[in-house]
Image 1: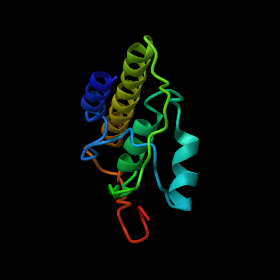
Image 2 (image 1 turned 180 degrees about the vertical axis):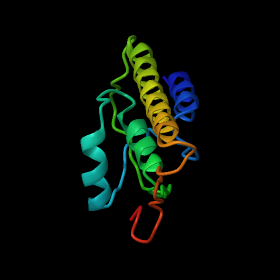
Image 3 (image 1 turned 135 degrees about the vertical axis):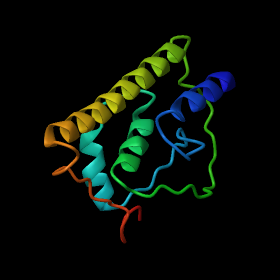
Length: 129
């Protein structure tokens, strides 16, 4: 189980930059971020929170890790098929991210030499609260 966690974390880091523990069971979002991000989630399995963090980063939200008092509860949801489900979720997420990046690039090309296509930064005040 621990080895699966290490492998998953390494693979998740290809989707989310600078967040060492994407699987922490505690996520705190502002109302604004929750309303914007949760409807966009498509992955329902092990990587749903990796997708949440990747979307937040892509949309300019700040992400911070803060210490939280946590207590594990006995009982594991990990089964022999879990590694395959985890890998499938991350592959689906990487494909979604690659598709999104490709679509953004295609739109820039269609606009002609990069003009007419702007991405506004969202890292202003009030984000990532």
